[in-house]
Image (tube, rainbow, N blue to C red; front, side, top):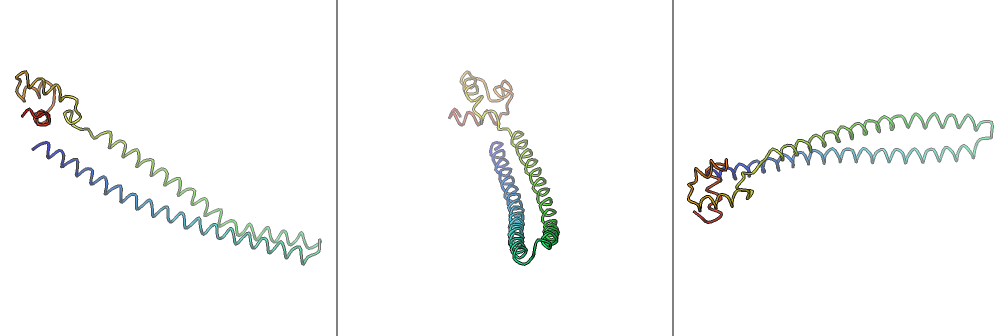
Length: 167
């Protein structure tokens, strides 16, 4: 009976962990999609800036003599820098979002690893004491004495004997 409760508890814990992982995975996927869309928008803006710079350069070379060339270059540099500032700001925001996301993932991984380390199986289910239990039972010891001798529960002794078909 106790073994069944333990197995049901482990199953429930496993189910909860799976649901939690699914929820976290969907949240992470949503964040990744957001960041991917933002990067796509930045690429479009950069492409538009490059096209505009090419057009300005062509217009500059075609329509201006050398005296006005310097003035037009200054205007072009000023316009390009004013267009690049929002992109640079957005890139720093993305960088901080990625850093925050990385910290969250590392913390979650560490939490899951700690949780896995804290879960332990009964000794008899791991097969460590099964041979000892069977040997002591064959020598005539009762289940309670075997449990005390090996520092395990009586239900673990019964479970090991059932596995060994001694009971």
